Image (cartoon, rainbow, N blue to C red; front, side):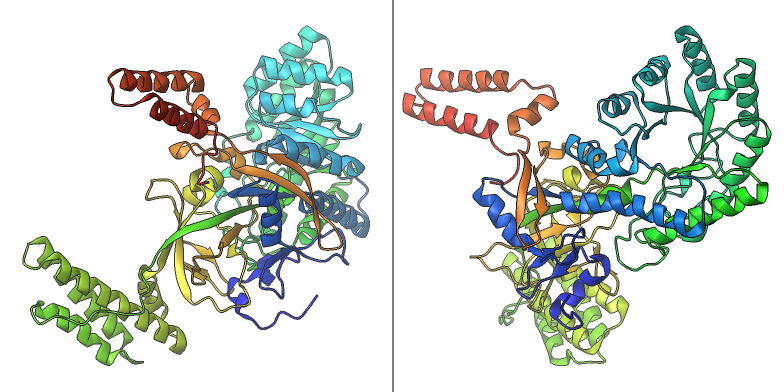
Length: 629
């Protein structure tokens, strides 16, 4: 790979979070590289978008990279395989993918395909997800792990599926589920394959700390665990209890939390064996995190370990605990979803227009202006290093005073407009000098309030809901011109009419910033952004705010010669489809509009040709893309 030590693109930290999958090309384009082949050439993302456009696939588009998804499946399975071999572990690994992380049919189907050589299975946390799992051509040694709250119908389907050869494990999460499993198994006269979820007292750090520890929502505490074992023994079903599930956590930032939680899970496992429970599988749940920022630190959006280190930590911890207890090494199970699928999708969207706050010129005060306008302009005489904070303080004071005078009717619109323009020009000068001389972090933060707003063709609530809801960070960069110095700062606003529809936290090479370095927007060129690592949760959690629906989806496979194949395409929602989701019948809408047109023609407000034009415009809209076209 070429040397990337210097260059304007370094500001975005692509070489840190890209992990060899994403890089900056000599052309300044963002490129993606096939991780399954070291000799492959990177593919330019702007050229991919251009080629998709020629085939009628418009932006915004969710780009799924099949090569990345296969890499995700292989990496987890092969890393566990390597760790088992290196540690002399005598058990096997049988991972499962949690369907809730991405339920889209294309994704689940490909994960099952790519997981075939590894006996990779699925985790179902609901009846609909179990229905999905049972429709997949899973390998004979793969598991279907059933978590979540279960009613009799859920349990019955899981038990009956055993007759088809599925290894469907019903994980008992409560004493009520123990009774349901005993009752349904008796009615069907079929031995179920059972697991039990044990709450660990160890709590991990990070944004999802509440999903771990003894106050987590699911699982049995030690007293309930003993009661469950006794009840299964009474019912003659203890021999069916083969799996212990102990969820370590989600997006665990610190690898030492993994070790501590796994150690506690092993204590429960060996104690249950001593109680006569014939356990063979230890399921340590989720937790394998994604390093969104590239920091390799134990923070909410990063992790201080690699996939290989995570796998080695679990294998070594379990091996030591089992050897110490003198018991056989169990089959290890983990439910890694985010680490498998997050990297596989990129959301690509255009800038539609820009609201600029960084201005190059300012008007001179006029003779009849209030003296505060001249005072504001006078700050320009002492915009020098060492006085920048003073300049910001003075400019903010004078502008606020001018605004107050305008609200009271003392000055007019044109005076306050001149004051605003002078203020923005001052902030531009101060920001540039602060960047050149290394201003204080507090000063830089104040200056970021004058960043541009780029209005972009996407819905935050539909495509990036975690960014809005829980302040999740995703790498987000311009897809072109990264060989040029980005000379402006901006935040991004989506196409919804909601003030929350904006992105104002960005991953840079050295920090998380409230603004993103961008280039000037040229009127004759597209300016594209890519948001990376959005394959986990975002599609499923997205909502219909302002009735913006699913985007177009294109699945590509990377070739070794720097080209790509479009292997699957799904058109985004039409307006008619989205209306049907919220209980409107598109045909009824069409009929209602047609009646309004007919009334207008009858009342001679329209002629017949105008009526046809209106109906055609309405029909075209109802069949069109919900996004800007």
